[in-house]
Structures are given as C-alpha cells and as structure tokens.
Length: 248
Image 1 (cartoon, rainbow, N blue to C red):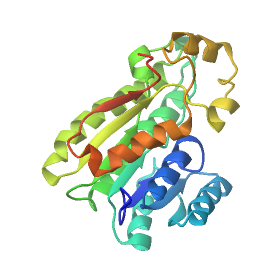
Image 2 (image 1 turned 135 degrees about the vertical axis):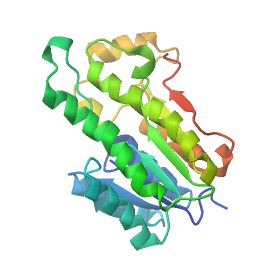
Image 3 (image 1 turned 30 degrees about the vertical axis):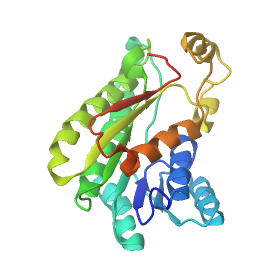
C-alpha cells in the first residue's frame, strides 16, 4: 500500500520548484493534494494535470498565505474537496538579497509577511482540522546554518521558521500533530535560475563548500517531505533536516 493512502495534503507555493515536486511526490504515494499558488495559475494547473495523469487526485487553489482570509480559504479547499486534512507543507516563500545599507521596510515586510506570517496563519487554519498522526512540514533553509552575507532579512525569516518549528512541535504534540522542518541548500529550480543563482559565482562558491559537490534537485527535497508526512517518521517532531549535500 502507498505510504499516504487516504491522506489529504495542502502544499503552499506548489506551482513550481520544490513545492511542485513535493505535491507530485505526495500524490504519488496516495495523498490527495491541494496545490496552492499565489499568481501562477498555469503552473499549478500543470502540476494538477501531471498528478491526474499518474492516477492521483489534486486541485489547484489560489490564495495568499500572508492574508488571514486567504490562508483559511486554502485550508478550507482541502476540507471542501477531500473532506479532511492530514498534511500541511508550508513551502510558500520569497527570497531576495541586500546588504545592510540597502534594507528598507518594503524588503523586510515582503519577506516576513510571506515567509513567517504566512506560515503561522496557514498553520493556524490547518491545525483546527488536524489530529492524531497529522504532519506539518516547514520548508526552511540551510542559510540558518551558514548565514551568508547580504541575506540578513531572508536568513532572519528562516531562523524564525526554525524557532517556530520547535515551538509548535511542543504546542501541538498533545494532539498528536508532528511539526518538522526541511532546510535545503541551493536547489536548482525555476526560481534559482531566474534569480541568476544557477550558473553564477555564488553557485560555484557554494558547490565548492559542499561535500557532495553539486546543487540539489527538487525531487531530493520532495522525498524527504514524503518521509516526514508518513508514518515512517512517526517518532520525529521538532526536527530540522538539513538537506544540503553536507553543507553546514
């Protein structure tokens, strides 16, 4: 039997990249999936079509995680379409780099509103429908370990994600809800290619410091999400799994 048979998952920011890979992998293991997107309807529809073609169940749902009504609507779609909620993957996130002297209010709030407030609002909405055996997976980053220059705001958001993961793992434990984080290194996605990270001196520098000598691929993060969503990880909560090819 598939590891996630009869489970229902919400994956935020799932129209491309790591989120799309996670949604597809969860569906391949039997979960019905809400594929959330903020603006890329075509991307989300493509993920849903891929899942459906493989015999899975999924629905694309637009929503802004940093808005309370939006977060509740995303979670509500899982209940409306599939009748329950067992897995939440908080993958929505933005990243931009700036040295200290260039940080302004807009840069700060864009990152913290989506990466931190969005995670909290979506988790708040989801936890109401979750119970024994449920799993919440927060996508953080290896930047909380390596703290690269010019990333104070972005790294600050992921430091908050790590801390929140620990807090909520204790807060929700009495209800049997597990909360863990995945902290990826650089992963080759549409976003990192568009941002100019892939093929840059930055990528070369990171790869040079990475024991396995390369950047990651979305499916390598997705397989960890499947593990954390399944009963295979039933004794894990409050953990941060660093998936970075050995970079710390």
